[in-house]
Picture 1 (cartoon, helix red, strand yellow):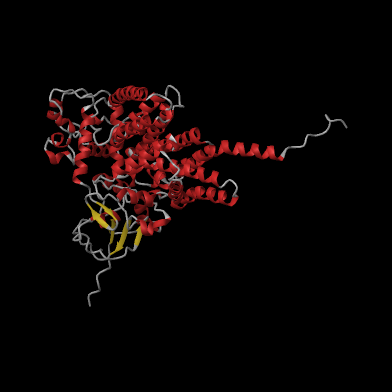
Picture 2 (spheres, rainbow, N blue to C red):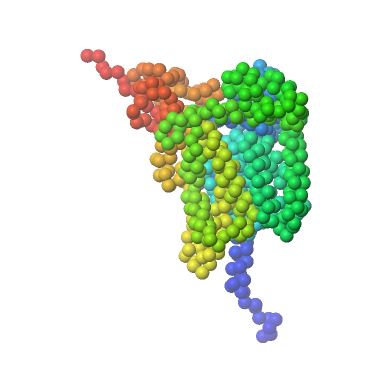
Length: 596
């Protein structure tokens, strides 16, 4: 037998390496597919939330007209993207024909739109939710690509798992709002800034960074915070000669930074104006302050003087022209006005009106999965352990960019008076996941000779998927095990969890168990339409309503916990007979005693 006739034995080590390579290549796609499946799990069973209708109508209006008058509460980019499949549908009503269009009252315009054909509008909303889901998947995909570019396959896979299976990110990726899009835009902005600052991303990094910051600024007003934050980080890197400034004379560093900041600033203005379709831009300060203001819940209190009370343009010369759309300027002032007045919410077992500095730190601690928190804690411990030997130059540019941005955003949010749920801190959550993945990668390298420790690390990251499965499909009500899950979580927060999504579940239960006569507090006009869509008979249950004996009462947990003590006395102090997903309480009113 010759050597050519003999079969070549397979190399087991080579086969294992090949299998590992294929697993590494296919795993990210499998995780993204699994994430999309979790996002879709039962989303059609969730009733529309109050906020979704306003976001939907803004998106439809963006495609129908160049008049941006509805885009003051939120900039239009996120809403415009989610409305793409809606704009392609035939038979949409002209939003400019509704009587509240003139006043720019978004809520009333949305109510008029859905009243015409509620079943059709409801189906449109579910289509818009699919666009939000795709944006959530895009967020996870970008985190993977970005982490892989900086740190390699291992860290990238960990970052992907920590984002894709985070129950809170999945929850916000199922509803039509600007919160998940803001998280995506912020991650893009910080990520592209880090690539630009590293000096390794090529000549187009300045363009991609500018576009990403612009996207953040026209998705949510909090995106504007990135301008001073990333600007300050850029100055720090230039002063210390880090990243793209390494090895350059000081004068050249700051000249380059100044030129790039100027280019980025002009690009940012162009992006904002382009997304607002250059509507009412370039007005003088005098004309801005004299313009008729949109009329809605917040501005109506100011009687056409909101801009004079809360806009920074009032301090500028009257003849100065501002290169920003009027609606964008009014939106910034209206957010300031809303924040100044506070918002009724529920935190740490109490009804609150003005925000607490502890609100967002606590919410991030109880709404992130254990793996993310423990890895962040381990990363902080590693940094403290080597604090004496560490210097700024030993910390990578990308870690400085993500870590400093997360901390500064959190510091800004802690000053807010709007305790509306963890969703307003969504821009921070992907940044935390990225930092946690970096800590995982460092720990893996430190334990290279200890296989059990590495298996424990892999299991810790993988436990994020278990957190998602245990929360499914009611992701909005997720609390981690550190507060005892729902048992402890609902003693801390209820506002961002009871968002009206469980009306469909209540209607289903009422039909299956013949719950009637039923008293129900539907909360708002749009939510009343959702309830009547299910054709369940009811009587309105108000603050001082006295239900008849032998009837049932349904009340949302949020309504009961935030209402004055004089309200709903007939059920206060009682344990509900039935709980619908922890958010809607059902009480049986005892029948009247028999008359002897």
